[in-house]
Amino acid sequence: MIYNKYLRMLTFFIFPVLVFLFAIFVEDFFNLSYFFPWADIPLHFIGGVSIGWMVILFFRMWGERDYFRVSKKLISILIVVGVVSLIAVLWEFWEFYFSFTIGWVYEYSLEDILLDLFMGMLGGLGIAVFSKI
Image 1: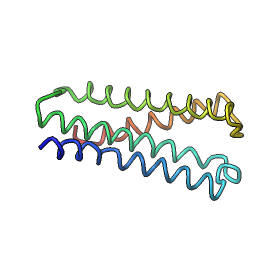
Image 2 (image 1 turned 45 degrees about the vertical axis):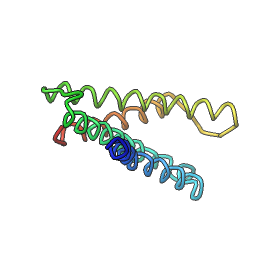
Image 3 (image 1 turned 180 degrees about the vertical axis):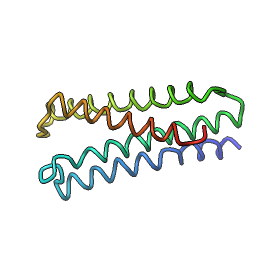
Image 4 (image 1 turned 120 degrees about the horizontal axis):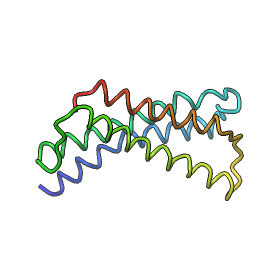
């Protein structure tokens, strides 16, 4: 029983991990952002959708087991967007850290970082609004 619960929770991470691996694959093998600087915009949106979907799956599992239940849709949406925002901010910190410590060369600007954060949050908001939580 416990094994199945943890295995189920592990499957919640499949979509975000696949999005992450796809983004790395596209960047490392095709250097897509060099040729198309706007290419990371849909990737950040899809990343927000994948993290939002993961949070929704956790909500559903916790609701089934009566661990955590939110009765208001608006509160659920705010929690999903909050978790997606936290992960997006941590992601941008991670990119910033590695760009300066190991020499990844990204052309960072405040506008690029804010657009990345906004697209991630927008993806999380979209999946939260249009899904049944």
